Length: 79
Image 1 (cartoon, rainbow, N blue to C red):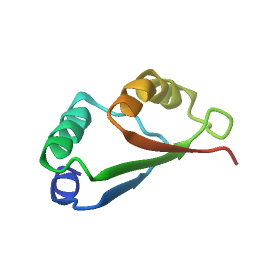
Image 2: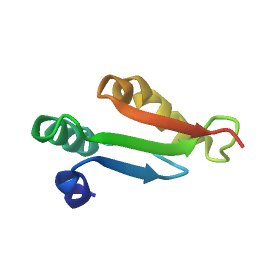
Image 3: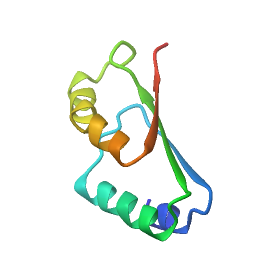
């Protein structure tokens, strides 16, 4: 993941049903934004109504506002 984020020039799209960002992920995002502030980071993940992993979703929701503050674009699947 580090190599993908570090080499991004326009955007990075991540798709995962159970997205729980770590401190290392946030450091990578900050480094990328310093290096190239125009790169968009897009995350596609489950919403609360479409997940069967309540524990993982709770872990993601705890960091959702911080992700948005770092200009991460989030799409939540509501299927």
